[in-house]
Image 1 (cartoon, helix red, strand yellow):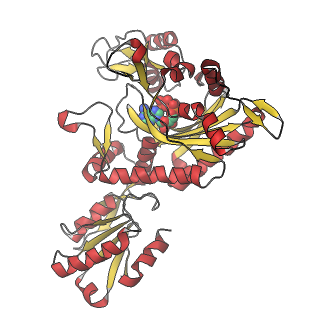
Image 2 (tube, rainbow, N blue to C red):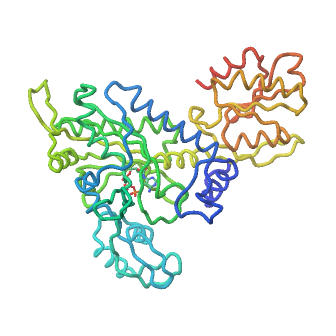
Length: 464
Ligand code: ATP
């Protein structure tokens, strides 16, 4: 099997476009940096991941409920959370070629050390002392590192006064804190319990363009789990374990990710302990997900700024307190990317004329594969198409199916392999007589004859 290669990202990006997973954003106008659009296959994959997450972290649990909050929130939310004053990246400009680069990334890539959380002054010094070159033009002519806010601003109403500034949310988390009392009062949940949300977030990031890894508009799946302070270590361990189970459920191979704890100076202002789940992407080992103990920083800040009481009355202890929070956070787009990298395989496969060729196959976990079944009539002859469409109609209500009658059967198999379809059903002339079809398995390429009357049950069993 040929798998991880240096140009794996190029291969995945090109497959993504060719097969309709992900397209460059606004492409016909020359694109818009760091934006991507999900195509017909990509949207299915992304939806499957989101639905699986919602089932795993919300529906299958008694102690977690969901919300879907507005993206635009009162600006005071972002003042209280610390984002207006503190959510920024230190950037340096190359005076020679005008490249603008995140100072921490420049240091990390050049010196293989962690620089997140350092002051701009320290980063400027490190860049100078180590004579770090511009990765674009190779010169050493940098500006000092300066901070740039990461939140996108817009204006509410028709007048562009500063007092009308509102922000596009840079994380979904704050909506869970702001709605803490609403959820509590409407559900009567007892601590420990969690509030979850899936939704878009926006960050005005400078990125080295690693496909959908870091974009300016992305989706997050976040869970704020409210606890008693004294239980934080136990809960942290519990959620770290749940996140590991989720990766397993997604089908991410164990050898491709690791867990790294943040150093003290790397921690966010609100956190006392954070771990990153890091995935071994082709461009380096990078954060896939995070798990943070946020203390009661957020609820406390919102209580102080809004004047609204955020306390919880614990009937067990007969005590009021502001709950502490453990936050497992997941990027949807980084999940899609990790799943694609993990699934990508190249292997030798026999051709119809007895030779071999390299086939590209996305070995997605069947649960999240974008298309589950492809129905392929061997020819476009009317009687075959009619039979094949009947089978499509029979299966489409239960499985995501694709009907395809263009080009040779070999080409159609390769196409389905590239989008990771676990089962292809071929309808041939014999099918008209024996009421049976050939089912091909994506991974083994083995073919089995199955009666049309049994095919639904057969797939149900296989895809369970
Ligand atoms: P990084 O260090 O890579 O910038 P972060 O620590 O700022 O990430 P968090 O604020 O913890 O990220 O966000 C939670 C999750 O949201 C991340 O683990 C990641 O999966 C996802 N995420 C964050 N920023 C982006 C982005 N710009 N594009 C895509 N996904 C993102």
